[in-house]
Image (cartoon, rainbow, N blue to C red):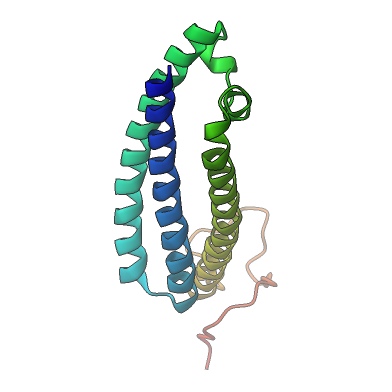
Length: 160
């Protein structure tokens, strides 16, 4: 069982390293979002995709280790948490804390970046609305009167 625990610990440490790198990339992405640096955002996104694929492979491997440990302990692998494993095997406590910490930081910065992206999308939608707003439409709604003005502000005033 010791070899399995060592393998699981190694797997979890690799996951922590991946999540640390993802956190670093999220910080870089945040800066790129603020600076509107599209090339940097694209570069970061490509690297994140690579890390997600590697993390997915590690997670599948972790599930295999958890299944083996669960069988030995008589616990269904889907019911076995890392906190419970750390109770049985204290040598996993350090990696459990590291994983909790890095995932928490990653969730927090990801939430902030999501808000930045949503704000940027609202600005784009507003700007497009300003540019594409027309006073008269080629086809009008039958209940709308021709001289009825829209209250929507627009960026370009076409009347001179």
